[in-house]
Length: 158
Image 1 (cartoon, rainbow, N blue to C red):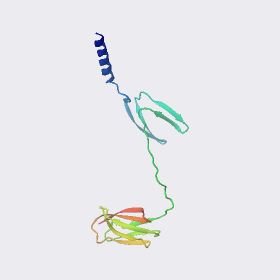
Image 2: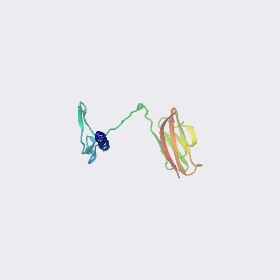
Image 3: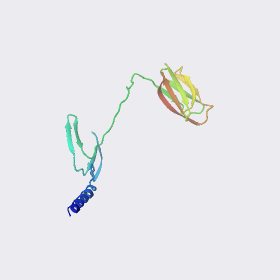
């Protein structure tokens, strides 16, 4: 009889633990509120939460916690003041690359598969690029300064 009570107690204990769920909190509704000062995510129906307050503000730690990851890599280069344009685009026979400074500039003309069609140095402020022998398609013109891409233009040939 003693073993029967022990087995029954263990069975009820195991069945009771099967219905427990850790770290689960049903919420009724939620959303995102946007205003002039920023954006905040919210949820309604949270059972437990705590609030931490610091010098820069406060945060409510609970079931829903929105976050944003911002990663800055490298240094923004602001000393390059290079103006350039490509015209006419769409083109039929030729393309003109207009730049203010021609120091150490070159261009690469690519097709959509990445194949280099033309690769030349920029020697004048207005450089003419012949497109008349090329089929009608979309091309990319990449302007390079000292092995670093400065700007890429999408060119359409009609």
